[in-house]
Length: 91
Figure (cartoon, rainbow, N blue to C red):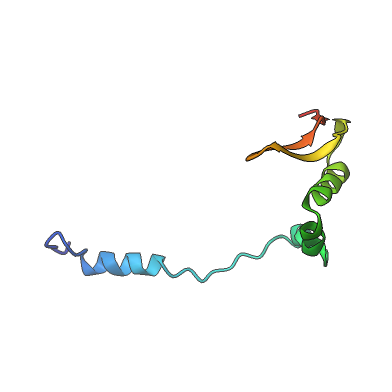
């Protein structure tokens, strides 16, 4: 074992730690996952144009509501936001 003066790590330890800082491996996602994860063209612009309407549409398309919400976003008591006001999920 190398000796150290307490201020610098031993060279072998320093090299081992330095090697951990350089990670070059890549792990490709499952093809089915990747196919479903890619956003369709224009989705960012659609969301930026009207965020509450975008999220209301997403919520209605992707979730099963027990009771539909009447308002997507309520900022009445800002900075506290309420999303999907009046809606109920079975979750």
